[in-house]
Length: 352
Image 1 (cartoon, rainbow, N blue to C red):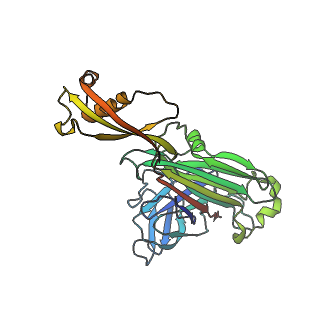
Image 2 (tube, rainbow, N blue to C red):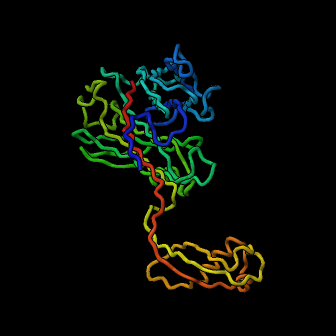
Image 3 (cartoon, helix red, strand yellow):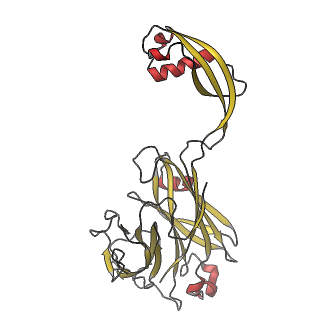
């Protein structure tokens, strides 16, 4: 079991370094068509790289409002918004990210043109959390086979109630509507895979991954009781919430636990099916079978069922096989714990 305390951009179980830029409206809806600069160039670590939403190097070119650049080098980068669609003001605050063998995410929020600007340039605080939910059974998923779960904890550090908007963006899939949630002073809540599936209308166990976007608007009627207190926050004081993401992955369908095991020694004294290799006849053979307390069972039937699976025997074939049980011993074993845990603290990003 591993417990790692990662920074914002080091998500659990990530496979390859990448940079994702998410563009939102003030209502947490995805906004397509923005253009950005990344300094230094993430492929060369010198100069400046420019990319536009849905352009050739955008791995999410079919998803308006999400730009993903893969195969980048590790390093510290500054992302700035260059242009936005007509009808919106640009986000003038650049974002700093770090790529370290993982995925880094930067979020920009654009308000409609003409929105009143206060003396504080910060109008929006955004927390972007990666989520991974469901099961991967073979090679069909981006991660190795296993069962993945995500729990996002949110704590309101303020001394008064605050309101947040949260929504879900699925990789190569749909985006949800924004949900309004009120948090009382110094109280906490959580968003789990069950909440994510509910908002998406997805109730199966298929693997799904993407981002949960948590938005606190500082210049909104959603926060009427804050008055000038919230508006006078400096950029160094924008971390209004404590947002942590707890990731778990387990290659087993059930939680590891101890099991009772019967070790059975036996002989095959007759095989009229001729499906069992001759060298197995009249030799001492052993098998180990999980058992249960106070279980009444036919040991010979258990052995024959194992033989049936191994040698493709029918019920009729089993009647042509004679088995003698030599010895039974009982032991206690444990399922292997192939379990990984990771904790990520999400840093806020300010928008103007």
